[in-house]
Image 1 (cartoon, one colour):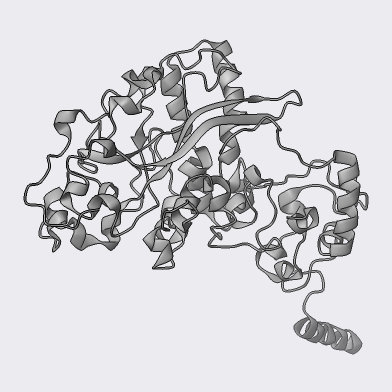
Image 2 (image 1 turned 60 degrees about the horizontal axis):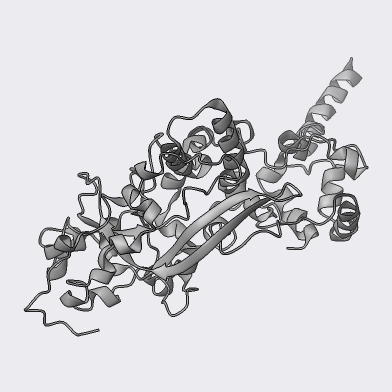
Length: 374
Length: 68
């Protein structure tokens, strides 16, 4: 976006409900001052962060009270994963890691304004629609700004040789068709993740017949409760390896991600619950290594082995037919589809002990497989 | 006294027809410098050049590597 486009306000905005509020009421500054440099002193670029109740609470009390505890606002799962890999740490290490978290991780949090008014800070902002508020954020300029590295590409078919997610390609669905306001604004517990949140999207909400005991498709009956839906219905997803973060000589944050690849790995579910009873789930490799934060605090992730580096994925590459579900034996007996020791860097073997699939757990070849070959 | 009654009546009618002039409801807000500048593309472009002179262009670290 050109700089002026980012801050141009449409006259239509002034006629809208939000346009009836004086600029200064939300943004501060001095509206009587004709000098732009002094007029913008004390300006609040995003009045909805960190306290959305002050800006939005009068008209949207429930949402603005709940949203600061939502996953998008806190991005707590990232902080929790780092904390688990750190273990107990002295104040110096904690302070250094807090700097790293603030400089790198926290850049992706989403406030009310960064979804409904402007692009996220992570991509340097800019109004979505000339300051007009968008009740439903446009996914290509909001969601994709932070989830563009993996999810958006999978969903819209930007990954080489892979089809777009069927929900996007065949049903014209957007992110918000599954991730509705009730989920996005919901407060999450301290240990919540997108996989455990009570308001997460559920395949069976739209496909109840597939999850039913008497599901009409035999494969659904056979695999019910044993494999997550995505194990059969997801295509390869982007896996990232070995990222290091730091700041350059100018003090600007950088990341160095050594390798990304499209791959598909099925792993064990280390902690089955009644909600997620599966033996097998699709796994995603976040780019962490023991030295990811060494720039800030060498060796800070001293409990690296305490938390898997192959974690449950949320693939957005769903197809009805995939290479692994074309026939029973496209998956059964296929060692390469299942996460094994040889897929691991030696530094992460211990961390993934409960996630790798040993040979004896690979589903056996089906002698009566009548499905098509690959 | 009779004139005073007429005046009061006229004032009440005027209120009904024109509304209270100080109430902002339904009325455009008085133009502030914020509105004057941020709704004027030409001004914003010119100011953008000035801002760039003062603050420089936004940069990202040249040390970034790989996909993020």
